Length: 490
Image 1: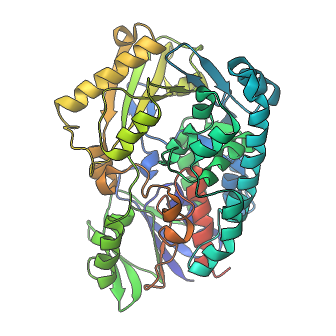
Image 2 (image 1 turned 120 degrees about the vertical axis):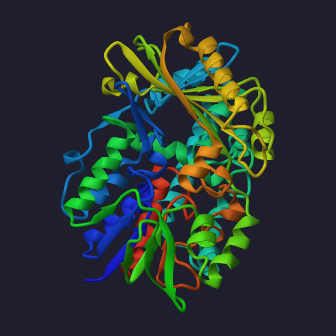
Image 3 (image 1 turned 135 degrees about the vertical axis):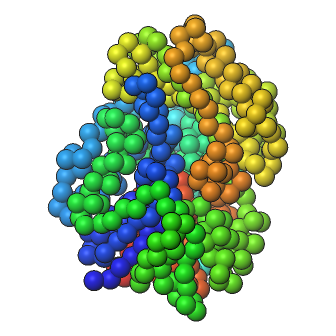
C-alpha cells in the first residue's frame, strides 16, 4: 500500500486526506495545533462556542462528494441547516437589503432600493451563471501545471472580461451604489478586493444562489469533526499538536517529514496544506527549491488579514440575522486603505450571529457573536495589535455594533476576546498574518497561482487557499480534488 502524508488539517488538507484514503492510499495527516480545522479552529468559553471561521458554507455537493467516494452519506456525520436570508446588508443611512435565493423576494428587495436596476440585475445574473460554468464547474477542480493549460482557458477569460474587476462588471449592470456593493462584497470573503479582483469571481453569486448558504449544527467545527470521523473511519491517521519542522528529501524527491516532537514519517507522497511561504522557506529549508520559491513568493501580493472580536451576551436576538454586513461610511476608499496598508479609523464589519440559527452555540438565554473587520496584513501596516491599539480597536468595533444593531451590547457582555493579524502569524504560520494566502488577482490565479504539484520535487503537492482555485470552502475543497487527481494519476 502506498503511503502519503498531508501536512495540515484544514478543510483542504482533510478533503485531500479523505480522497487519498478512499482510494486506498495509507494517509497520515499531521496538524500543528491541538485541534483540527486550521483556520476553522474553535474555542469554547462558559457554554459559548466560537468558530474562528470560515462560517459561510456553500456548495454542499462538493462536501457530500467526499462521503460518496466510499459509498457513505454526509448526513451520518454532519447536519447542515439552511440559512435565510443569506446575508442582511445594512448601511449607515438606514437602508437594509436581505440577500437570498428566493427569486421573488430578491427582486422585491432590488425594486425597493432601486427599481431602475431590476433589469440590470437580470443581466448580471446571466453573466454570473456564465462565469460559474466556465470558472467553477469546468475549471474549479482542474490543476494548472503548465502555461498551455492557461492558454486553453484564455477564450473563456476573454469572453467574460476577466481582466475587469468584479466591481467594474457589477457597475456595468446596476447603477445604485448600494446594489453595487451588495453584488461585489463577496470577494472579501476569499481575500479579494472587489475593486481589483477578477470579474471571474462574480461566480460566487451563482454558487450561493444554486447551492444555498448553510450552517453545520454545532458550528463550522462540527463540519471539521465530521470530516475527521470519516477520515479515521476509512483508516486514516490524524496526529495533533505536533508541528512539522521539515519535509525531508533525497535529491528531488520528498521522502517524508520530521516533527517538533521527534516523530518521523516516511511516505511516497507529501502534500502541504500549510502556509505557502512557511512550507517553502521553513519546511524545505534543506533543499535549494525552498529558498528559491520563497524569494518568488516574497514578491507576490498577499491578501489582507482580519481583526475579529468574539463575544457572548445575555439575551436572545431573533431580529439579528445569522450573517450581517454593516457597511461603513466609505467603500472604495476603505478598500484602498486596507489593501494599501493603512489602518483606518472607520471600518465595514461582517457580523456573525450563529445562535440565530443554532441555539446550541450559546447557553440558554444568551447569544454568540463575532464581528470581523478586514485589515491590512503585517507587511503593510505596523500596528500594536497585541497591545493598547488592539484593545482600542476591539472596543471601537463593539461600539459600532452597539450603535448599529445591538443596543446595550456592552452592558450585556458575558465574555469577549479578539483575534488579530499577529495571531494569524503565530498560530497558523501565516506569512505576514495574511488570512487568505495569495491575493486573488488575475495575475495570481490558475497557472499563476501556486501549483498543486511542485515543478521540481515531483512527489510534493500543495492544497488549500494558496493553490488554484483559491480560498473559501468550495475553493479549498476544489483544490483537494485537483491535487488528488494528480496524486492518484486520474
